[in-house]
Length: 368
Image (cartoon, rainbow, N blue to C red; front, side, top):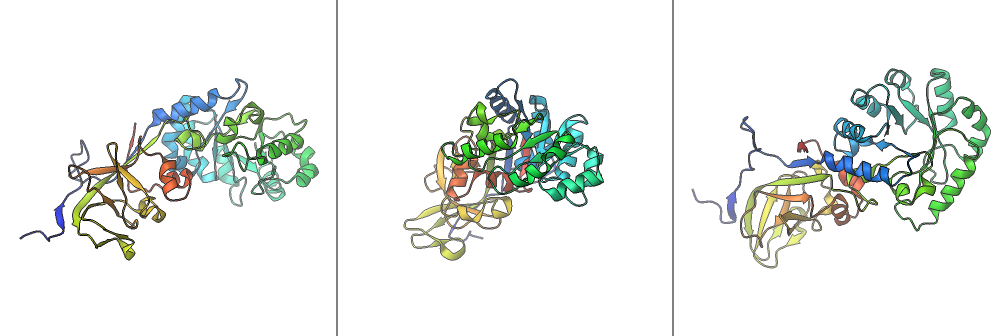
């Protein structure tokens, strides 16, 4: 039976290299753990020798697998880890071992006491309510404190800190920290306002102090204090422009077809061919973290050759103009040496954090 006139051919996705189970390939996410370790070492080198460089592995290691990420960073030299919630800390405890400190940004939430105690987690307490909960349910258990130096997101405000400071310091906290709101822009005056507030709030405090994540590290030693907490820079994202790329994503082609001038592609007919066009349909979409806002904006690559995404991103599919390629591709790359997570984020008017942490579970993952 003849193929329908639009079809160039139906391409089955390539088999997974080395696979003997008969499965067909899916989109392939590669995570370069050597690059991850190199990024930690580079950020560590930017700090004075007396400053401890920790590692943030929240959100399942920024979407890349918390256990694999934590093991790599432990081997690179990290000795303190930060997660968002207690469950994330429990997930990496066995990986990092019993002695390594795991700090929980969300603090001591209701119902967390048993897990905090059993896993030896260090909640970063953010409010008078959390302080009360922790001291009553786990007296003597290690904790840290977050101060609000102006971001107005988490932490004790200056008036609250003044009221309870001596009580808290009498309990010997493991860490006193704050967080910069505008560190992605070193020229923003908010950075120095927060620095001054944090210095004022911690004057005379004789426990480890921490203010900076990746952006603060890059702004220089006055922001470093005793502990830095790199996150996005470890994973290849801005503002650490010298970061080694950590993530690659190759998406297989399902089908290629010829589109006549005047025909549309995808939902809503948002892309109209003005000349005859060869369009490839690829097996990934917003269910895999390639968000809908990339439609008609993002670019994929065949080697070094850019191929524009045409039409809307679908739940499981992308459509890409491959008219200019000399052969029908088996797959196209959307993340890799030619395009970082921040480049892709720009196409969707978002940030690299959202791209990384949205990468879905359907990808075939390989750790290099």
